[in-house]
Image (cartoon, rainbow, N blue to C red; front, side):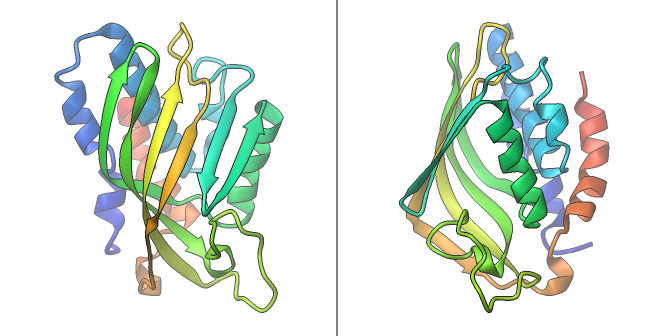
Length: 199
């Protein structure tokens, strides 16, 4: 087992404890959607999280990182974004700490966010294009604090993600290659968790 495997698999343990105290049916549905979204996302199963029972037909994402903002407007652009993360081998990410508040509109909060990122994406933004001369197979652990707001519709489906990075919190760690969680390993580790919480 790698150094980060347990932290990765239990990324939503705190959220599950919070769910034990949430009685409002809408709030529970929103938090369960968020948990399933996160598990499917990092397992590379983004098509499932974008299904009509989980996400609206025209999602809208605003992702602000490293002084840059990416706006994804509509399903085609959101799918393209997930496909680009998969192609760049940058889909393995997880929350180490999270403090969130749920309400009727959706939820918001602040998280310490980890991601295994290939060297060429470690510019000012993790969305930076691959630069010449860098080894795309060399992986680093990027850790930073993110604030976010995720709105939901009247059917408790995700409308979009609004994510904002605290650039001063960025920390880049060079992990032991044996501790890097690959996309295939992530899918394997999370499969039992996804099966456990499927509705």
